[in-house]
Image (cartoon, rainbow over all chains, first blue to last red; front, side):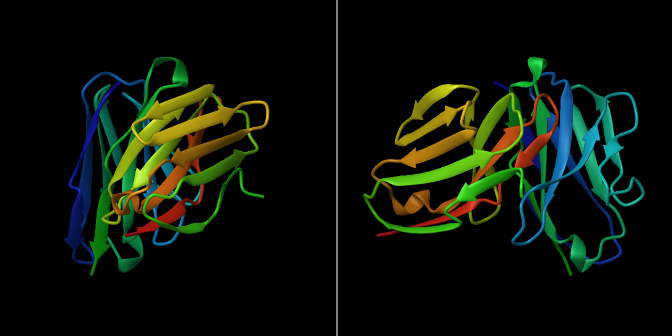
Length: 114
Length: 108
């Protein structure tokens, strides 16, 4: 099975700044996804990161706030832009292998905006 | 009604007890994962199931596709098992849908 390295594991950021979270997979995965878990809530899908094209965002999430890159089949980044305290959450990436039944998770990034 | 439900929401056990966490879902799935979220927020994938049963150490996970139900069992529980356990279903090749999580506290 694949291993996803997600960085940073945690960060404390000033409001108005941006943070880029990286996920590196040790093998090629067809699909990658980004999720958010607000305090006390379930994990919620932000977007699907498509290789070579623009990400597909879920309702309530926009590209200007959460730009995503997927330059190849092993790497993706999520940027949280112009942060406010409401963005304080855990952000998680996952990758889906061939056939759509295998999935792998990063370790999560705990973001605190002050 | 949420697509993925878990019970119980919170669970406190004494060290050594046998623990069961349940997950039920309402959508067609191609796979189900059990995740463990540590108090610091880090997430670990424990199991991926598409049928039957898997065992890893003191952890056992089962799934019944017909009944759309999965269980996670912990035998001889230990305080280091204290975490939030999350059921995540992969809805027929789409993205994951996550359950609300079960917060487990194992007391020494």
